[in-house]
Image (spheres, rainbow, N blue to C red):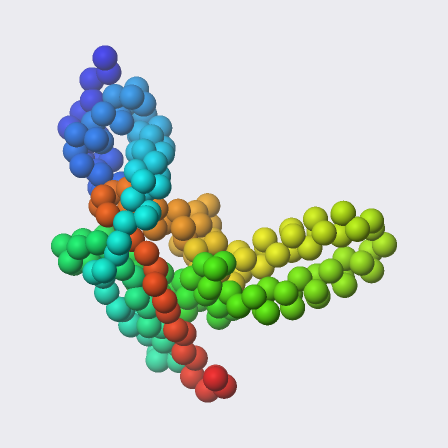
Length: 201
């Protein structure tokens, strides 16, 4: 068995927010390798998160984020299961990061794909289809091209599908799942609104 230093356990806990015993187990499983232990904890956290995703979230916060010297503002509501988690630094950091993400991406239209109006999706598909048809490719290929462009659109306009502005190797949905795995509660991004100075509503 690999001898794990207490300092390494502490370091892993600081990086992941996971309890000391779980961190020690992960380090043992990874043979003392820090990056391997982080990966193990992320995978376990994601598995736990999937189990919790259906649970009711009736607590949380409404957070206001102001950016650019008062030129951009975001109001966002993020829910969790208990007031205890809503008051934690990790939860507050997540909420602030989500608001910052919305502020940085003016094209964001909804939290998830389900929030996008059907007429908006159909209109975009029609545009993509016409563009694809001009390539002269057969119909099945055109449909694949349309679906591919639609997937790309989701990564631009749906908050949960976007790449995190602070770490472009993670999607926003991964960020939320990581905290679900760490805190042991379901977390849901309920809604947001973005304001920009002088913008026509």
